[in-house]
Structure formats: structure tokens, C-alpha cells
Length: 314
Image (cartoon, rainbow, N blue to C red; front, side, top):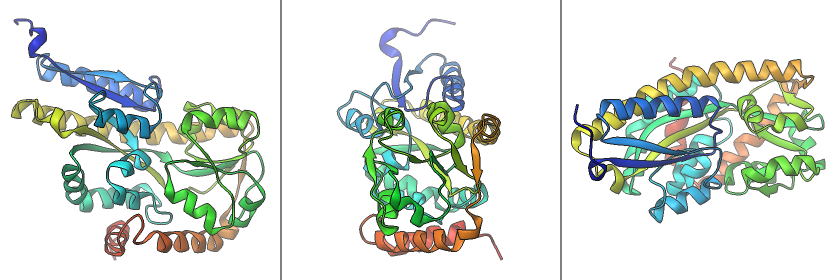
């Protein structure tokens, strides 16, 4: 087979906060190999992992400036592009993987259109495990947060609002600042999945973790539309199809690794906190947070649509 000339090759610069040896990093490498093989070398990834391009806000800025073409990110970064996508992180809406599957199936076309209007192509959904409350002090009920220093991602208006609802004062930091914050006791509570806490080494500074999940951490891979349009129709199709196959593989791997990370943290001595007896208090705070964000982050109709999509069939 004739080698593809350099000028015929399209390099897609892809950024992620996930470390290269994480579940996402491993799947990303496999996706890149599939993409290069199936396009016969016409398209390939240049991956920047482990937050080397900065926080998600930095990556979005670089995408808009033409320095990065594509990225895998959570609703925090996605929400900078399409603010209403943050509805997927509203507390109490998507509580388990079944809810997430129903929302993806029913709402995908709607969200794809939103990203298209913003100049991006939504390639595939992903997730980063079950969100839990982790801390250096026991957190049983929402009111416990008031006496401590909970971390809130500075670009995450959802958890920031939740903390205001319960009367807590968030410590607003970027992802890269959390580990030093835990070291210096600047923060003592973090919302995270087990797989995320292990990948970012936060678990080494934590002592407690909630037994119950407080929702699924939702993410997606996107690419700038102008970069996507550089590809032939056939290569566009290959990029999308390989992205969706990679996402399916990632779902299986992340969910398995997240469960294993949870058990590994328990074996290391992390104490499990049962917030179940206070579930009504958590649900009340979640509901108030959702309502307060209507008109500021998402519309009332979109929230109702996502809530209906997440609900199991009768």
C-alpha cells in the first residue's frame, strides 16, 4: 500500500484530563489505532492527556483558538460550549447507569444539534463513574458540609449552587489544584468517582467515602466542526463510527474499573459512610438546586424533558 503523503494526512489534536494509563487513556489509544487503520493513515490522533493542556476551560479556549481540535471532557467543559448541557449534571436527575442510558437514547439528537449550532460535532458520550462524596471528615447529611471546606470545580455552577443551597462555602479550584489543596487542608471534601480519585491520587489524602452514589459523572468527546469538515465524507463516517465503538468499550471498562477502584479504596482503609438515613435531606437539597438553576443554566422545559427521559418506563 502506498504511503500517505504528509500533506494528505489530517492530524486531530485531542486533549483530555484523564491520565494516559487510566481507563479513558487506554481506550483513547485503541481508538486512535482504529482510526488510523480504517482511514488507511489519512487521519490520526495526537493525544494530549493528563491535563497537559490545562483545565477544561483552557482546552475549550485552545479549541476556539485553533490550537486543539478535539477533546474528551465532563459536563463542566461541555457546559462552557453549550451551557444547557449542564442539565445532565443537575443533582437527582441521572442517578444510575440505567437513567443515563435512557437519556442518551432519547436525547442524543437534541444535544447533537445544540453542539452543531455552537460549531462542534458531538462524537460520542462517555462517563467517568459514580459520583460520591469523599472527605477527610465524616459527611452524613448536607448540613455537615457547612462546617468544612468542600471543593467545587471553579467552572461548575451546579455543585457550587448545591453548596450554597445547603449553606456551605465552596473552595473554588481547578482540577490540578485539588491534590495540593488536600495536602494543605485547603479542602477536606471532594465530589468524585472512585476511578477518578484513584487516577488523580486524591484517594491517598482521603479517609471517608459515601456508600451511595450521588449520580453519574457524564462526559463526551467533541471535535471542532471546521476540523471535522476537513475530512472526506467517508473519513467523517469512520471518525464517528470508531468514536461510538470506543465509547461502548469505555462504558464497560470504566464501570468495571470504577467498581474495582471503590473496593481498592476500601481495602486501603477508606471508611464507608452510609448517607442512606438522611437521603430525604439530600433529595430536598438536590430538588431546590435544580429549581434554582432554571432560567440560569437550563430551561424549565429541558429539565422536564431530561427528567422524563431518565425515568424508567411504567
